[in-house]
Length: 430
Image (cartoon, rainbow, N blue to C red):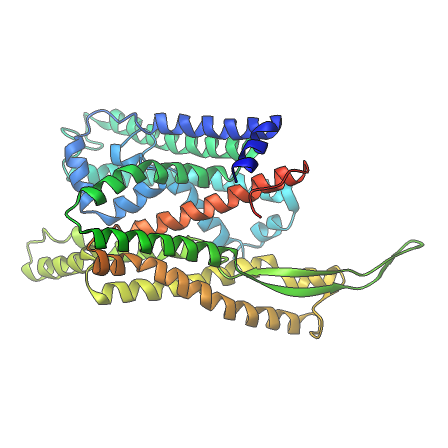
């Protein structure tokens, strides 16, 4: 591992890519510590301790929301736009046609996603500023009142510009650096918060047995994520002989790699957002003059914010499993593998081309997705077991953050592996 890292730095262009990536991540971390004026940081810390939604958004802002910096929105609006765009592809024929036009079509879809990010960031900024205003974090600031219209507009424009700046930095890393830039920005924010989280765990009144159990759960979770993320079912594919002009090309054998967890962290985000939504809406009715409405809203808020009941975690588990199947089915249909195989003269041995191939692939995909869905469900409810075993009050977003970190590390190592193998060096992965 050490020799591979040294070899990577001996290659001038690969070394420049690594240093370029590290440099832009440092720029992001510096910007993340520039707070918006007029924020009560003590009140902000108290608010984060009692609000799951802000904890999730802080995860995707790379920790910038916790200080309410100029990049407090992070890349979450861009992620939301990307998810919306993927869901719209099978519904809008023009977008589906663009997705099949190669690199030019992908660039056009990325441009649409960036345009969609601007209004999403503005709306999210409005919602967050309104929440902080009601919570007393933004002192002496009435959003869009007569005297504060221009300051309010400038604040939301600055937050939107901060999101687009992070998207730009992420794209620069993707084009000129190593790894996926957007994922690395989220990764950098999560890793930057690790020392503070460890110090809080160690400083707590925990026994040595609880600390050992907490470490064992973390190591086992990382090992499980690596195994499931790398797990795949290889479907053999045979290509028939082809004649072009006066030349005959021999058929070849290859395979279709169907990943056990092809949905990644998206089902966790979907499920957690839905679990947060009812409590957020109910919180607006707690101050109702009708006592019945106020009591009902308080019960809803307590159910979704306490995170202690078995019913809450069971519902969370079922939502993660359902969204894993949903997202996997949507992305698999977009690839249109049976039609592409038939066009290129490929077939699965023992399976007729066309509809039988599609039915066979769907059957295999549903089976292996069951393993990935159950695993993601277990990762989602991991804080419930961690609290019961170790008495460590982990955050709901901790499992999501761990999945992101491991996934980004694996993806970055694979890209560096490919770069080194092209130059006849031994890579990181043995």
